[in-house]
Length: 281
Image 1 (cartoon, helix red, strand yellow):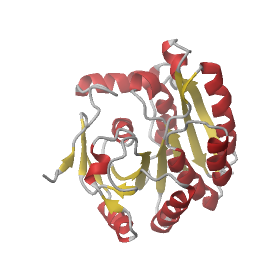
Image 2 (image 1 turned 180 degrees about the horizontal axis):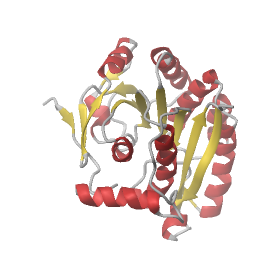
Image 3 (image 1 turned 135 degrees about the vertical axis):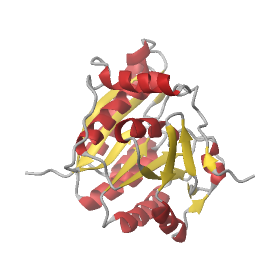
């Protein structure tokens, strides 16, 4: 049976299923002054941000880090096009896929940018329900975007194949499709997985140094050479390749681990919020 709407797969697990509870949790992610930005974002109209790296774990772990990224995006203003690239954790579906259906969260339905999705499909990216049906990496970004922008459209892209070759191909397609538009590309990724807290900090510092330099090839090869378990490394590489072409700068907004949030530092996951922007003098 073909689904008309991509229903929320991880509501009640990664974030609250109840609309009121979800709004309260999102508020807490922003308002927490120790872990989050400490205040609610205000929407601006002057756009400088074209890329973000945002984590995708359960909100109790990574929501505060994500709030730092979305706080900056809200301050920067609502882009014309929002693209979210997430890794495929479960292995279902095509190596590279999009989805033309609407998406559902407890905060309401979200439409996709159909014209851009059509352009992606024309260029070989498959419209694939199976790849997206259970995957959380894109879904968990949506309530944050609904919280700051209320109504918006977006473009979902799920990467099962995160090879450098595929990241190059995807970056070229996106650059061609987006080059005359006001856009932001969001790479959904967590960083080190199931390391001791001090090891996660050490490894992720190495990966983030490559990201700060906006060096896609060096980042991709470093996470493999140093065995840094960044789950969305291909998504980040795709983003970096686009940001390289635009000659943008980067800024690490926040880094923390699940251990910093819940106190168990023996077996943690790392989370980073990073923005890519053009400097205005």
